[in-house]
Amino acid sequence: KTSMKKTLLTIFAVSALSLSACGGGGTEDNAANNEGTDTEKKVLNVGTEATFPPFEFMDKGEVTGFDVDLLNAVAEEAGYEVKIDNTGWDAMFAGLQSEQLDLGMAGITITDERIESYDFSDPYFESKTMVVFKEGVTIEKADDLKGKKLGVQNGTTGQFAAEAVVGQNSPDISKYETAALMFQALQSDNVEAVVTDIAVALEYQKNNPDSGLKTMSDDEEFQSEYYGIAFPKGSELTEEFDAALDTVLDNGTYAEIYQKWFGEEPNVDALKE
Ligand code: ARG
Image 1 (cartoon, rainbow, N blue to C red):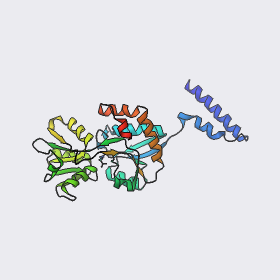
Image 2 (tube, rainbow, N blue to C red):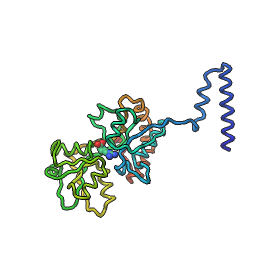
Image 3 (cartoon, rainbow, N blue to C red):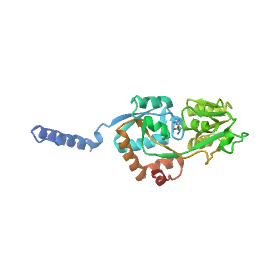
Image 4 (cartoon, rainbow, N blue to C red):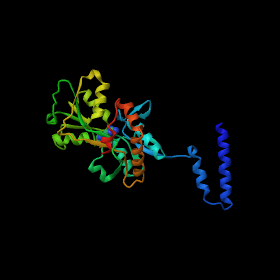
């Protein structure tokens, strides 16, 4: 049945082409577009740092997670395919700067500083800072971070939040290349607490039930932050992805993906404000 359909389409396309060759004009492009599903989509190169569950992590050699599902949905809506590579955090930003990457998707917080160097999509997730530590350590408020050995992922908002409390270049802050290495440092008692993003902190606590991990979030010290898809400055994709994200937020696809990874309904209205 499909091959019959294909044959008919081909006949249609060929006759349209010959029509335009005879001076019909203008139908050529339409004939090509009408083939729809067979059209090759442009493949976009995506960088990420895949040790950040539930947003992105490696599973059987594949990058998977909330960000991956969302990006696939948004890209499809915008008419693109994506090829996601676990480039690492710094290489991702370097790749955006050199335009070797088309976009970065890694739970990246939209910050005033980053906006100077990259374009961002509209927000797709609300986050805030959370501290994770072991039983026996007392951290009840941000101020309690002072004097503690802290671990952060290098160049993240967790680092900036820790520095805001204990001071920039504090010798008490150890910086790790990946989120996974940061959590390993906590597990092996190289640090007393790590400062990271709330959903990642809670996921890690859930996945390590025997580690006796505690969490703390200080609403006075730590403000809401929002994740966005990052693009090279001036990228034409930003607008296309914003429109596609809007559709995915409105048509229930976002809620479906959110349910899958967080087991609850998202507050889409709050996100769009
Ligand atoms: N949201 C934080 C930031 O943008 C941390 C993101 C870390 N992401 C990752 N995939 N390791 O700084």
